[in-house]
View 1 (cartoon, rainbow, N blue to C red):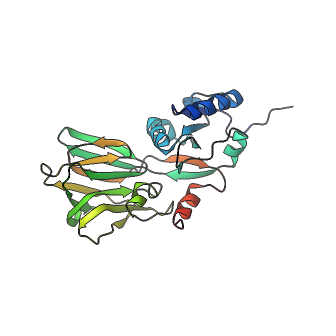
View 2 (view 1 turned 90 degrees about the vertical axis):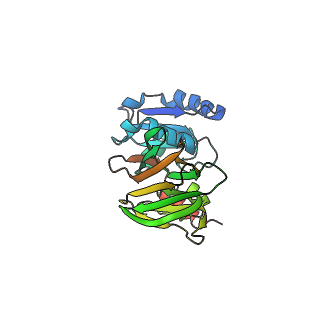
Length: 262
C-alpha cells in the first residue's frame, strides 16, 4: 500500500534549552525524525514567544522564501505559539491556518555609529536615566510632534500590538488591518496624548532632543542599541513570515479575544 503523502512531511524541530522543551524535542524526533531547516517543509519551534522571535530572525533567509513556522509552546504566555502536543502533529500541521506577518525595520544612529535591526513585535525608545526622554516625531517627512516628554515611545505591528504595546495602554490591532500602533510610554507632556494609528506604509522618524543630558536606547524586540540620536522605522516590504496556527487558535482570533479580556 502506497504511503500517504502529506503536505508537511519533513519537519525541522528547533528547541530552546528549557528542560521540558528538550524532553518534548526528544519525543517528537523519535516519532517524526528531524530534518535540516534548509530541506524542511516546515520549522517547528519549541519554546516561548521570545524564542520564536529569535528563530524568525535567525532563519530569516529561509523564511522569507515562504517556509512556514509552527510554534509549540514551552514558555509562559505563548501568544505566537500553539499548544505543545506530540500527537498527530502532521495532521495538525496540514489543518493549520496561516498568518502572514511583516516585521518592522529600524535604522538607528547612535554615538557608536549606525545600526539596523528587525522587529516582529515592536520597536521602542526608552529613557536610559532617571530623566524623561524628549523626542521629536516625524511621519513621512513632516514633524507631527515637536517634543514628546515621556519614558519613551513604541511603534508596534498588529502581531505585536498585544505585547508591550498593550501594557502601555496602546490599541489592539486586528491582523491584516494594514495599520501600526504608535504608543507613548508614560507620557508627561502632552499629558493626554494616547498615541496614533498609522498606515503600514508610514515612515516614522524619532529625533532625540537633549541626547547628552537625556540619553535614550532603541530596542527592536530584544536587540538594544544605546545612546541613539535618531531612529527611522518603517515596515519591511520585502520580508514576510508565515506562521501556522491550529484551527480555533489562529492569531487573528487570539488578537480578537484580547480586545474582550478583562
